Image 1: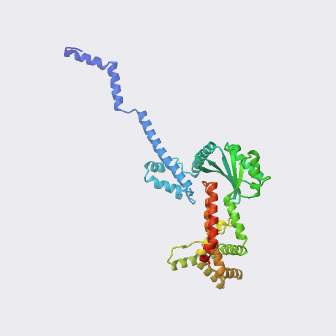
Image 2: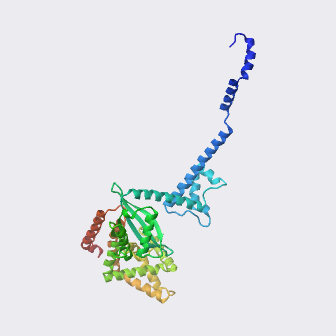
Image 3: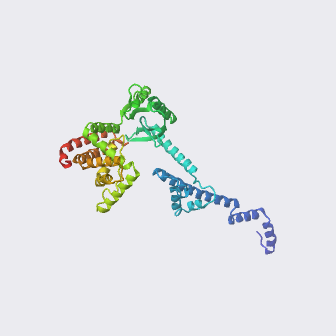
Length: 414
């Protein structure tokens, strides 16, 4: 400090050149202005956050479409696809997604990128499923054979486990193409799947297949080959398949029922095998609908006849009953139409005469009454959470219902 003011000028000049003053001035300037690098860093960080928000919306949209089994791509133009249209709709509420869709650079919307994202999601789901399977002490193998639309034979493989809380769960491991369904080939596929997913066959305590010899055979079947590795892997014949065999034997054991089923099958094929006849039948359906005040069974198309599963044939029988009048009128028009060839006219005449009889309508009503309850049982038996005790209880319930219906419902049906 100083006592005389005339010394202030020299002291102020000296202070202005001191390191303390210079450092303080620089610090104050830094507080008032943001460094260009910091500005760039902050802008980049904000841009990254916006991009992440947009990508999350893209991922979640793909997830929803895949979960619902809806197609992703459009016809000839991806711009009209479900994927793009949903993103545009969501962009109205999400500004980050709107900016992302308007950008000129990469948008991660190409179908190759979609497939890659879906594969990553599938890998994540499979990884979580396998982690849960590995935690379980034991597991059971469920295997079935099927053909896709290109007639390529495929094997579907599932594993069933029971948690510590005694809650059962089933996990689908995938479809596996094969040129042969011999027991040896199936055995190699199962071994490969367990090895690929790092699952020991020694954890296997159950096997569930249909009754085909290649899987159920006691000498060289798949179940026998697996039991040579793990003797405790008990084989169980699929309950739903067993039910179908029981229904098949019961129905085919009655000649009149076998004849009725054959007539219905040929009748449905007669209508559905010709685009022209389908159009004519649909026209009759529309006319009947306009005349009827009831909304029940309106425009119910004839369901295709299941060639292998008897229980599934109830849907076809129900559509025949719902379209009974339209079918009879359709066959009558084919009989009286002079432009129809003699073979078609003769077939239509035969179907019409069958439908006119009380016997045909009686069998239609009776079989629907029986299969209706059996169809419910068939779906229950395929429930992944169903226990053995519940299976027996439901089967016994249907058996009791059929026995009681034999006496109590005959008068109603007759």
